[in-house]
Image 1 (cartoon, rainbow, N blue to C red):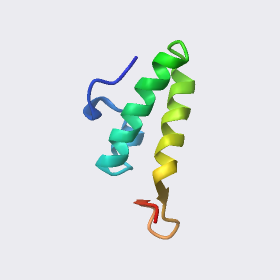
Image 2: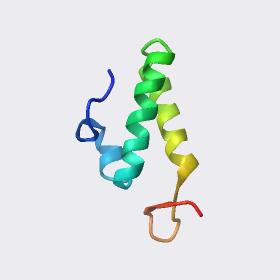
Image 3: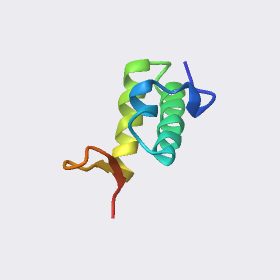
Length: 68
């Protein structure tokens, strides 16, 4: 089901990535949800891929940071 707000995102997203990345996730998820016939697993994969296009996880700190 699509997300109305970033407050509705899974904890794995809310607790780990910055607010901007959460917004990217929500937008990508909702778009993929519609595009791929409400396939939840695929929508989550698309959303994480969208986040990873802009952010990367710092191996030392474990925090997600915007790519250069």
